[in-house]
Length: 217
Length: 220
Image 1: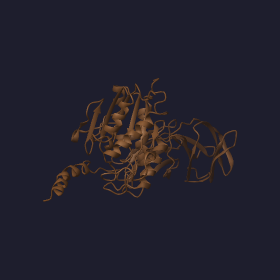
Image 2 (image 1 turned 180 degrees about the vertical axis):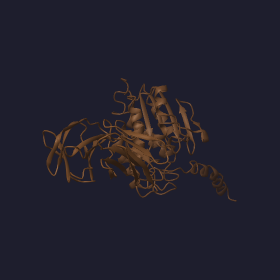
Image 3 (image 1 turned 60 degrees about the vertical axis):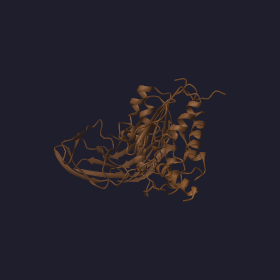
Image 4 (image 1 turned 90 degrees about the vertical axis):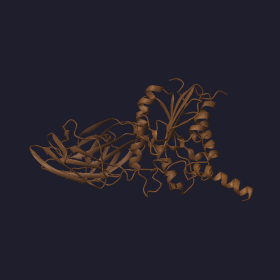
């Protein structure tokens, strides 16, 4: 064997060890995350019970929205909504990358609104408008007092989301272009945080709920 | 000229790029010490993702740790992450440097898992910023396309853009600006040869030595 070849072969174990030094590891998850939350838009308190579990989630009137809970994507999430002496079974399937919101309404009705956002940004606030009120055909949101449009033409069961500057803001709901109810103060929106204004039925017509889209762990 | 790194206590955590003695745990760690850092502590856990530094999580492919000018200690199967809140409370660093990107990019998947990546990124950034500790996030470098991780230039660009938008208030250090695609040779598409890690470590050190990462850190 020629000396040069011997020298080259002698180097092989070291080269191989270097090249194989790091074992193969995943560069991401098997599939994207999926989340579900529940919102109580009924006229009384509501409890959510997960199927096959004794765990319950209380949604009183002063805290009507849960956080977004991580769930297995593409598999039904089943449970029961209990309020006003009535039980309502629910089942929702969430795709990878999707956020689903189950809005409980009076008269044993629910509206499920889903979104797959791609506006993640730590420097601005993200605000969405969800329309869960069948009586509000085209919902809109504008800044109170200044009538600057934030959202318009959000149909029933639909959602729109956008990035806005992280500032204090008061908003006014419109349905088919007409103002509905009093202005709602959203407070100081924070950069990197996500929020939703939900349009839901109320005793005097469409009303709004405001939710922080925080994740629960 | 006195470096802005001078006198800082620096903690570095991250993935496989810190988990072998000749990688960034060598070049970046040494670079910061040469710039006059008061102390540097580097912990690398191979394959780890950002959120795995919220609770102790075993590594999947080894790890290493290095304190000050001592040699890196290879951890092998004993490698485990340490919760960032615990590390910050114990070491009170002026600056935390995070090296993550390649373990989040899902190179072999057609769709980028943006919701998961957002969850991963924001949870670690929030844990650090809640302690009012300065931080800098080092994004992925080009590497070379293919290899056993299936790295692609479009996906690494997407990963880098995502991190740039989502790591504030941490400073983002865009490693893609340090070299051209494929300029630093790799052994497997993702991990560099010694020359690559030397160049990357040097470029990160220079970026950290200039504002804004260190702005205000001395005055903590």
